Image (tube, rainbow, N blue to C red):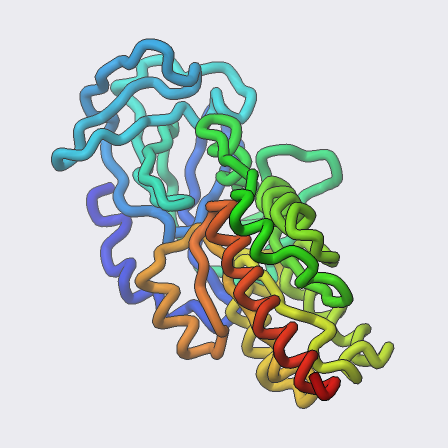
Length: 314
């Protein structure tokens, strides 16, 4: 187990090639689950835990790891299954999501697999706590919607400050934003912010759907007005086409190549800054802070408004 994450740094070469590596693990029973290796910092046997009164019922305790207090979440319990027993015999997957570090208590860690995003498919309708499914050696594996899990435990404020709302008043009129994210919770969060800003948006759940929507708009002549689509807000991890590949496809297209793209992701900021430069995205924004997202959108709308006024002789 100690060596399962050896050479993770070398795996960054997969990004931008529509590939990913998944850490497979089990909770109760034989069902396998997965999360992206890039979000995993370490795998350890469950350490000594300190119980905190009034904490969320799925948090089994706080671990002191290298001087940092890290909440340990019973992932099975958080996903609606019975709580884990014999906690000290379990493993903890330490992760970094949405600007926070937390550990997930799991029954067993299996392996790391390397696959193409084209082999990752959206989950069946009505399924919760899952962003996608894959098949590995004839076994179906569920990719966990960690953002949904964390939103129910930690909560995220989706209210935009009044100052930002006043600064962006009226800027979104006549303009549009395309949003791509495979997490229902993340899509809802972004749409809530855009609604508060008064911006119309089209929301899709993966990179391929986003690219196909852009091609449809090309055919409809939407881009005869170069300022109509103010920006694209895209997740990175998505079935069928990831955010990096989406940006690359956009930059290769003669009509779409100038579109402004923000990659909005819970993945590591340092890694993404270098990837954004290589694939040609315009900005990286870490999930999820309503005011940060709103300020980013507002800043872009100001630029678009100035360009529109200039084009109209204003």
